[in-house]
Structure formats: structure tokens, C-alpha cells
Length: 149
Image (cartoon, rainbow, N blue to C red; front, top):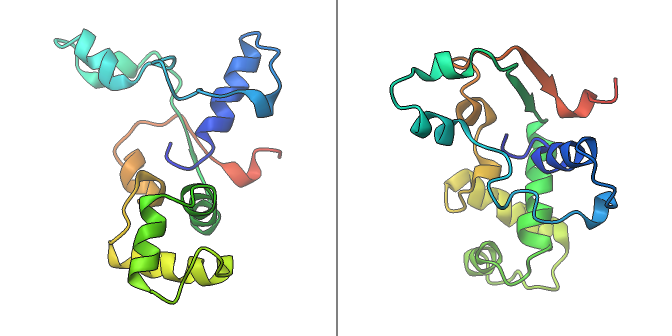
């Protein structure tokens, strides 16, 4: 799920599968096709309806507070990547903003760009649309902020 802890869940799955690597040292959890997508499953079985393919699986989805998700995306896509295209858009949109500007100033411009559609990214798109919450037969929907409960 976009920005709802998929990296954390994938690292957790690696631990369950026997990895003893420190959580902070696990890298590349999204690479290598380690976790097959339903698209790949459908391509391998073109004559079977997707609903029939997924029926035996327990379908779980997690959502995240949109504000928390946006702040996390800002930290990851802007603050941790100072030379990124997102930063260039921020500086171009408001030339008074520089790399040394306070994060709050950058965040305000970032929000303006998200709301205007000038910055688009799966991390900032709506969860309900991306996850097809109304159209997908989820067995369980959780909220990342309540996973410890």
C-alpha cells in the first residue's frame, strides 16, 4: 500500500522468514520481485478471473493517517533527497526558498505544489483510490497508527 508502512511490513516478513539482519540495516526490500504482485499472478494465469485467483488468499490492507503520510513523504522525498526534482520544483515555485530555509517553509511550498498537482507521486495520491477500497474484497483493513493495539 502506498505510504502505509509497506517497507516496515516487508522487513517484518523478512524477519518472520528467518532473517536476523538488524531492521535498520535491511535494504532493498522493494527490489527483486521478492513479493509477487497480483498483476504478475494474473499475467501467469490469463484465463482465470482475478477474483478467482485471489479468493484463497487472506486479503489485508492498511491505511495511514493522511497528514502523517504526507509528512513522511515530505521527509523521504524532499528532506532526505536535497537534489531531487521535488526540491527543484520547490525552489522554482518560490525563489525565496533555499536549501537552508527552515523545513516548515519548504513544507508550506511543498503542500502548495501537491494541492496544485505540480508534484505527483504514489506517496501523495489518495489511498482509497489507489487501494480500490470500495472495489476490492478485503478481509481485513487496518490503520497503521493502531498496529500496536
